[in-house]
Amino acid sequence: MTGGRCTEPAYFNGLARARGARVKVRQKTDSPENLVRYAKCIFTKDEYDSVWCVVDVDDFDIEAARVEAERLGVELAVSNPCFEIWLILHFTDHRAHVDNGKACCKLLTKHVPGYDKTKVDYATFDDGVEAAIKRAKELGPGNPSTDVWRLVEVLLQR
Image (cartoon, rainbow, N blue to C red; front, side, top):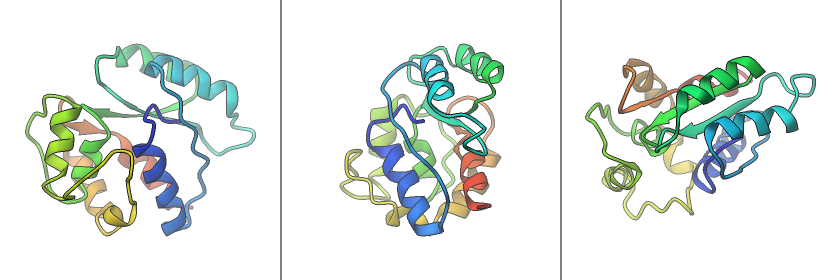
């Protein structure tokens, strides 16, 4: 379950095709807390090994989403400020504060000229997946940070 309309589904569906990962991606625009509840309703652990929500911090109360995710047994992958920080880590070890999603997208265009959230080509990022995992693990909490590496590692274990 992702809160992003285009970027996250394109990335994870591309990862699945390129790396043989098994994943079913659903998208819904809502608060992280509501996404967790929705994911729990439509996906069950009887059908799937795990249920994940991929969300951005934006202006949301992420702590409420974390509490709800733990209560419902849903995994949460949070990116601060947004998913594009995960994409940047495929190319560079970025550790400086990023004001917002727009600024993050602008940083990403240094590595992916013409980057467009609505037209993400996973192949652009495939060679940097392992580096992104390593770099994301080394980031502390706060801005920038991302837990997406946890989900990607699960998917790559097949």
